[in-house]
Image 1 (cartoon, rainbow, N blue to C red):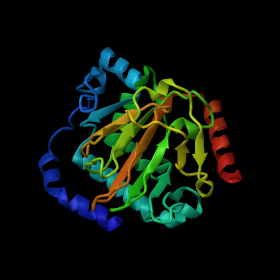
Image 2 (image 1 turned 90 degrees about the horizontal axis):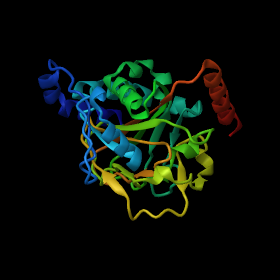
Image 3 (image 1 turned 90 degrees about the vertical axis):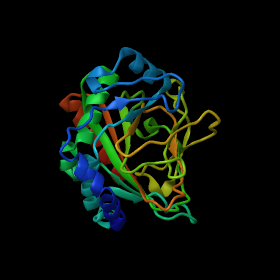
Image 4 (image 1 turned 45 degrees about the horizontal axis):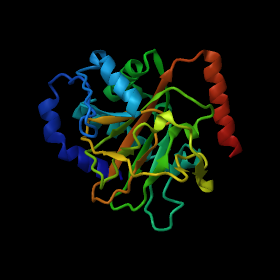
Length: 289
């Protein structure tokens, strides 16, 4: 996996040299690729009331030009350092092989709370841009709540099941913005994000948990109609954002290119007491499962 990341960085070295002296382009949010209506923003400060309303209606959005090739290289380098410690992190229940439940699947490697494990990730442009956009989309100051990275090897037959992120939460009706940032171009064959528009306005569905992966992102929504699903293929440097109750999925990686993605969640700021209680509940859940 680490060699694959090195090869990816090498292929992009030429582009990186060209853009290294340029200023970072402002983030542009665009759902025109997947829906007829369009919402575009040149920067977080330019996000319009109309585009925010459309995001709240659909429950998801594509963000174009969130970050730069140089910043993605920094993110990849920091995540690669964590993946070198994968077995150690598995023993500490901070990492999981999501493919271990499937006899016919290659490993799918997840690392939870990467910012806690590697604080320099919080200094990246990707992290700062996501935080700023979350404040605009939610209309209030936010804090970092959670993040994780998922690596899908080439020709991997396993999907990340349809689910709602809220099903993992210890409380209900959480209000947060969840970003998905691939470190390479992603097509549907590679396992891009897919969403059910408007699903965040419905009830939290019934989910099935894989018993051997109780701390991992391995829930599956039961009895779902996916006929209205909207795939969101995007380029490296782009991202998607969705609400905790928005139903979503990423398919198998059927290509010869590894797929690495970083997911970040931001929600309204909480008091120290509430943060400590949430941390205690998380530790309790990890210890008792």
